[in-house]
Length: 144
Ligand SMILES: [Zn+2]
Image 1: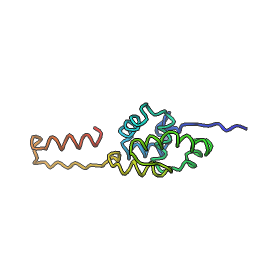
Image 2: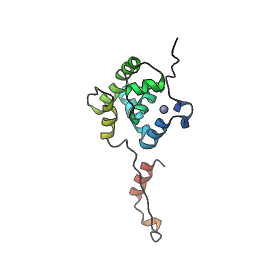
Image 3: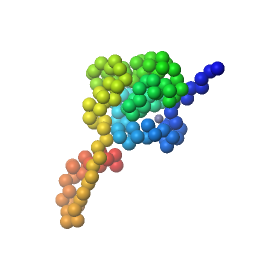
């Protein structure tokens, strides 16, 4: 009997099909994170690496990722320590020896966490009175 591995979660084919990845994308600036990790790796992350990263960012352990993707624990553990862990080390300058440090170190960088802004513009403020720099900053952080 052979196990049929999915390798990737359903997020790459149908975004609504993976609740973990959908949540991670809404909470984290994955575009920025992937860009920085790409620089650390010096090349683009593979689809599998992106998938594992999202699942790690959700808080899944390597065992849980293995179970979800129908891979063996040994496979995912060696794949992670040969990829994501090393890129995060290069990016943060800190040693990664266990999976939970990936999420922790990335969280401590702060810039990757999406911030929720509530913009309340009163009726009596004229558009010309709005601080342009602040507005640009807010729009950038909202991803508009
Ligand atoms: Zn997923």
